[in-house]
Length: 317
Image (cartoon, rainbow, N blue to C red; front, side, top):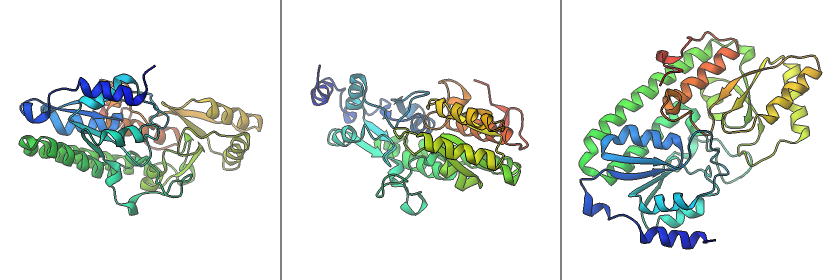
């Protein structure tokens, strides 16, 4: 079996012609997460060719690169990754790649005073910043900066698309604020599989309870399950939520534990936390991902919600 270093050497040997020699071609961009790939594709338009490493349902916390990933990274003109220790298993590889191509950790550029401290690592921050559309709009700007630097001749068009994208994010944030405010104050408790929604809670005034920690690599023990069951029963919380990229085992345990104590808890729906929906669907875009989450949460917790969400697009291609 080849080592990672051998695979990198092989990938570099077959890398494509340098960007300067083919300036008329689209810039080849590799993005780690679907959210970054979406921003790059929308902003870059036909000036870029974007490949995302992590597809629907893929958990970035524990993701490990394949040989195909290494080849794609080595051939890329630009690599965009999230940072903030989200892609924990890829960090050393991406740092090594920085000596061969342009590698940008887009969320690492956020000011520290807008970030939430990591609950497990004293020197790190919660990486799930896309859950607050206001913060994601800033990240989209950093994506635009990286794309414009990679293809300066297309900057004007990319900046126009960036501005349009950020306007739509602002519109979605307005919908989210209005819709989530319709949830009764006492019901604004969001119980999820892992602690990915702290930025969401801060932005929209929800208490957030994740049965696992910020990373899905952490485990929820029996004591933690019992603690959350106590919360569900004491506060008469009627719904919890599973996540598309995390096993629902712990959420089913909460449901059973509450039922044993005479309190019924529904599964309020499946949320997109660390990955977007299916490729080619509205939910497979950043806007659709957040629209789905907001609409699902508000509906399950008693809010007033349009049937098909913001602009009526949920469930459409």
